[in-house]
Every structure is written in C-alpha cells, then in structure tokens.
Image 1 (tube, rainbow, N blue to C red):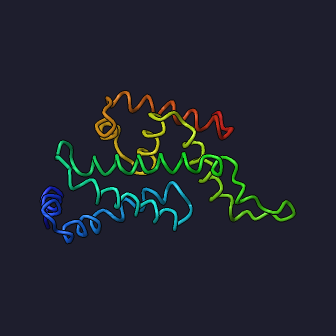
Image 2: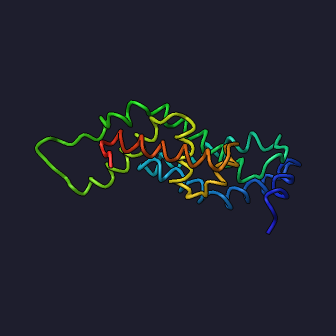
Image 3: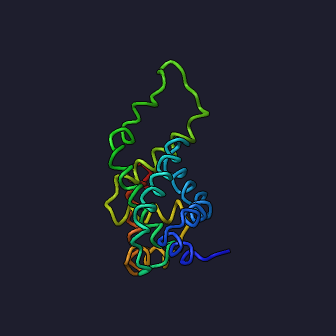
Length: 175
C-alpha cells in the first residue's frame, strides 16, 4: 500500500485514482469524527463530504510541511467549527426536537444528552473547544493534540480541563 505522501504526490501530478485511494483510506475516520458531533447521519455524511471537497482543492498545493493526518485533523476541526457556528442557535435551543408536552419518550434521553453535550462544547472558547473535540471524538493523546494545534502538551491538558469544567457548568452538572 502506498504512503499518504506518495498518494498526494501522485494526485498533484494529476491522478484522481490516488485521491480516491486517500478518500477510501480516511473516509471512516472522518465520518466517525462527525458522527460523534451530530446525531444526524446525513449531516455527518455531508460534513465528511465537505472535508474531502476541501482536501481535493487544497492538496494540489500541499507542501508536506506537516504530516497528512495532522492536516486532515485541522480540516476536520475547521469544518466542525463552521458547523457549530452555523447551527449555534439550533443546537442551543433544540427547537426542532422539542417533544409534545403530553408525551414523554425516554428512549430519546440518551440522544438528547449527547446533543446537549455537543451544543455545550460548541459554546466553549475556540482553544478549549478544539482540544475537547479532539480528545472526546478522536481519543487523541494530549501530546498529539498539542502538536496538531501548535501548543504544548501541558497547554492542551489545561484547555481540556477548563473546557470540561465549563461543559459541566453549562449542563448544570457542577460535580
């Protein structure tokens, strides 16, 4: 199997097949990243597709100053930030998901909680939001998060700690 570098270089020379191979290699990773952020599978697919459209446009000029997977995480994070900004009010208010007051469906409690958590994460300051998103959705070590976001491992840990504390506060869980 070819390395990411080889595939990107082939793509830069005009091989769409090389780009397709990159997509096959990373599609699940990208899709699952967004699936943890949004409960809507179609929306997660759209966000993943957006990432690959951005990559298709940007990889022609990729200079290999960082590893491809680091670059991919940055594109994921930027796309997620755009998603949070675009859906800020809907995520905070959940107006499209308010049940009829006369009917209580407890099967949705877990899904609502997930949405509330991500809505709270979306309200964090940018650095905290990025660190929390990468730690929760990708289970990345703080060292890797620091490298991707150009901060120290300690700074990543501090941002995570403050972010989680703020999320708990927003959710009314001050434990």
